[in-house]
Length: 112
Image (cartoon, rainbow, N blue to C red):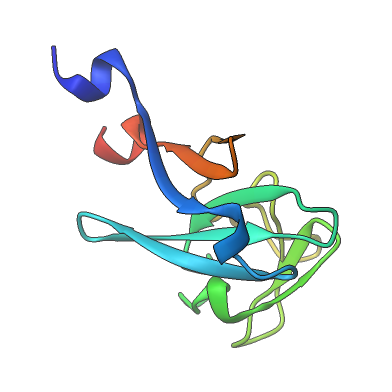
């Protein structure tokens, strides 16, 4: 059993390091994960790759619980990673928790 099996949570960034309505990118192996903070200080994490053409979602505009991809304007739901209709497709999402001002990601899925 690996350490990840025992505790899949990994501290990745401080909430204060993520600008409101913005994102920070953390790298896990070869995977880039965008960690978003909306105006209500909610934290979300998605693979930093739009399901349409692979644009960097971390460079998009955060509004409500969505991010607009900077390449072609697709709106991606931050809480599911799925594109808003009429577009379809999903970016991979990661479970997030915040404790003592730190953002923790469940990276077990990234390793599966």
